[in-house]
Every structure is written in structure tokens, then in C-alpha cells.
Image 1 (cartoon, rainbow, N blue to C red):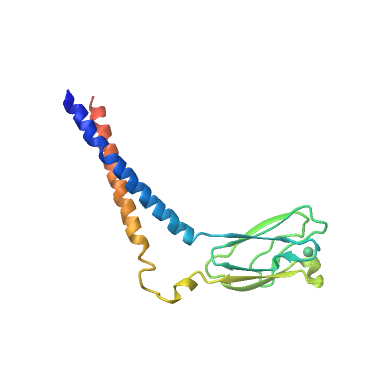
Image 2 (tube, rainbow, N blue to C red):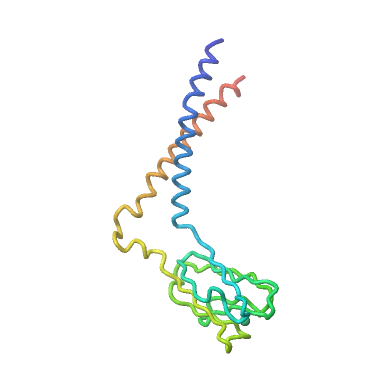
Length: 173
Ligand SMILES: [Cu+2]
């Protein structure tokens, strides 16, 4: 009779440790994701109605530029000279996002079609994603994520084993 509760006690004990391990692994993973996370930069139209704001932005491959304005006095659009992106017809309300994937690094100039002659142009500088790893290309930069992944895998397996171990006695009843 007390054997079953002993069994329960035994099974309850490793659980908190497992949960902590799992949380640590998950937290580590989250931090890594943030370091390579994609950012969004918003470009709008300034109070002169004839300028992008900011007119020049620098981003990294994987980032997104969102051309966003609403209720403008004049209709605008954003069209890349190199044809990479095009927000469509000029409008007083635009919400257009373009993600600069890997391979788009370089300088991309763009214009507002109705107002190019007024100097309504902009520049997006896209830096290569790998620029940070110039100092130590093959050191532990790339391998740093492996222990965390291994820990997450181990913690998940232990967690699963505990869950399965706990549910099997009750299913036998
Ligand atoms: Cu314009």
C-alpha cells in the first residue's frame, strides 16, 4: 500500500530538477535566437510631405523594412531603383513590408515615383549577416549553440521519461 506512494514520491523528486534543466535550456535557446533575431525598421514620410524619414537606414540581412504612413496629404510609394521591392501604387496610406533576405546585402536606393523630382528618395544599406564573425571564422562561434541543443534534447528526453513513467502506473489500474 505504501509502496505505491513511495513510488510516487520517488517519481516526484526528479521532476523539479528536470523542469529547471528544461527552463535553462529553453532560456539559453531564447537568448541565442535574440542575437540573430530579425529587426524591423519603419520608414515613414516626414512633415514636409516630400521626404522619407529616416531617408537612410542601415540594416542587416534578415531584417525587414516597413514603409508605413497613413492619412498623408500626398500619395507616396517606395520603389527600388534595382527592382528589389515595390510598394505598389502611390497612396496616402501605405503599409508595406519588405524582408531583406540573405544575399540582398549592398546599397539599395529607392524613390517615391510621384515626387522623385522633388528629391524624395531614400537609401537602405544592407550589411551581410556574417560580418561579425570576421575575427574568428571557425572558432567556437558556430559551435556554441550545440551544447544548448544537446542539453535541451537531454532535458526533453528525461522530462518525457518522467511523464511516461508517472502515467504508466495509473493506466495499469
Ligand atoms: Cu512622395
